[in-house]
Image (cartoon, rainbow, N blue to C red; front, top):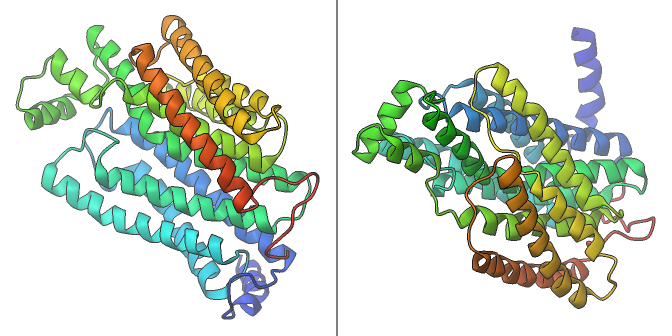
Amino acid sequence: MRRRAGSVAEWALPYWTRGEAGRETPEDLFKVLYLGWLVAFSLKVLGASWDVSWHFKWLRDDLAPPHMLNSVGTVIVVALTIIHVYTGYGVDKTAQRLIQWGTATFLIAVPLDLINHRVNGLDITSWSPSHMLLYIGTFFMICGVIRGWFMGAPPGRMRTLVLGGLFVFMFENVWFPAQHQEYGVFGIRAWDAGKPEAEPILLQFAADQMGRPIDREMVVNFSLPVPDQVYPLYGAMAAMIVLVFAHAMIGRRFAATAVAATYVVYRTLIWPLLAVADFPRSAVPVFLIAGALAIDLAFLIRHPVVRALAGSVVVTLVVDQVLRLQNAWLASPPLISPMTMALGGAGLAVLWLAGEWFLTRYRLRAQAGETVPAVPA
C-alpha cells in the first residue's frame, strides 16, 4: 500500500501547478478527475437516500450514519474543487465558476442548517430554506461538472455514458425534496394501520413542536407539510425541464427516458434494502418515466418553438394521467385538480422555451457524432 501510494503521488505531483481554467488537460488526469466526481456524487446519493428515510424514523442526529456518508462525499468534492480552481485542469472558466460557487453555497448551507436545527429543533420539511440552499449549491456544482465533461470529453461511448450518469445525479438532486411527500404517504398509511414507522421519541418531539397531542392530524402535518399542489407542479416543471436538457445535451434518441428510468430503478432497488433494515419506505415516482418518454418523442419535432409548446402540452397530459394511474394502482402523494396541472404545463412551456434558447445560445446541444472541446483532453 505504501508503494502504491508513493506511485500515485509520483504521478499526481507534477500536475500540481498553478494555471488558468481551460489549460490543456492530459487524458489520464481528465479521466481521474471526473471519476472522482462520479464517486463523490455516488456517496452523496447513497447518503441522501438513507438520510430521508432515517429522518422519518429517528430523531435527528448530526453524526447519524447517513450524514457521515454524505460527509465523505463532501470531502472529495472540496478536494476536487480545490484542484480545478488552483490548477485550471479539466474545466473552462464557466465550469470552474459553477463548481466553485456551487461548492461554496453548499458549504455555507451546512452550518446554517445546523444552526437552524439548534434554534428551531426538528426541521420537519425538506423544503426549508437551509435545506434548499444545500440543493441549490449541489445543483450549480453538478452543472459545472456536466459542462466540464461536455466540453472536454472526447466523442465516444464513454462520453455519452458519463454524461448520462451525471444527469442522473442532477435529476436525483432536483427531485430530492419531493421525496418528503413520497415518504409521507407511507407514513400516514402506517399510522392508519396502527403500526407507525416513526419511533415514539420522534413523534413526541414533532407533537411538542407543533403544540398538539400525538394524533392523526399531527402525523399528517409531519408527513405532508407542504400543499398537495407542490408535488405534481414540481414534477411537471422542475423534473421535466432537467430531462429536456438531458436529451438535448446527451443527444441520443431515448436519453431522457434512460435518465429517468435509471433513477426510478435505483429508487426501486433501494426500497427493499431500507425495508429489510426496518427503515420507512416510500412511493416510487414511476410516472416520471412516462414524462421522460414524452420528452424524447417531442424531440422528433425539428422546430424548437413548436417542439417546446407542443411538447409541454403532451408531457403535462402524460404526467397527469400516469400519476393518476399510479395513485390508483400503487401509491403516490394526494392528487389535485386539472387546473393545477394546467398551470404546471404553462410553467413547463416557459421553461422549455427558455431552455431551447439557452442550449442554442451557449452551444450546449450534442453535435452529430462529435463535440467541439473547450478544454482539450
